[in-house]
Length: 230
Image 1 (cartoon, rainbow, N blue to C red):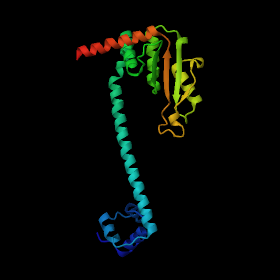
Image 2: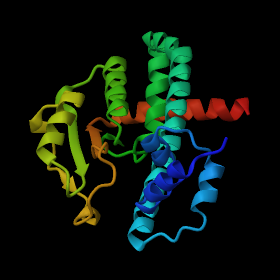
Image 3: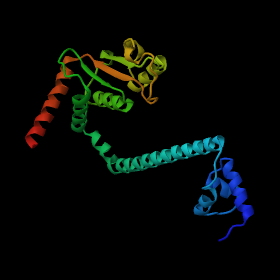
Image 4: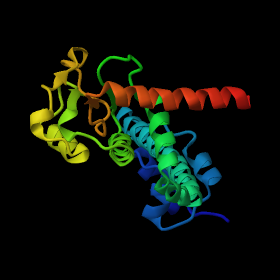
């Protein structure tokens, strides 16, 4: 298709103002091929201001494309993860079994609990869901003396200690009187957090040497069974 000089002159004028190819098409209401516009514009010497405008638009376009790619991959991962959850969610029915509860509890403790056989078991994690699961299983598997619980929060310097304390008290159902003084990581002072979802680390102590030994014993049984199976 041949384009008349008037259209070409309008397109060139827009280009000299820093318009991108698609912006020129939109402005003129015409679907001018990219190759045609390239031939029209190849001899143009753009002003510094026009080139600056075009460079800024190119940078923004690339950043937008990268973000769309990231969002697309994230959505795909989330969708696949939701599918996996749906496939396996019936496994929670197995937690009605005391044996499965103890195995799950001991496995959690093997991964995140203290193995020092002192006077109490110690379990710490930054994931509220894991802390809630640990306590739910512990309370379900054993008759506990709730007064033996102690809780310590380890936070960053830029976090709202009071607000997070209230959150963890609600999650753990441990009263304020059994919370030790919040610890602040000195390495975080003057360094803003890059993870707004981070809620600090919650450390749970339960003062019972016998209960600690029982969890470690179950853990030993599980690891021995694994070794035998291998």
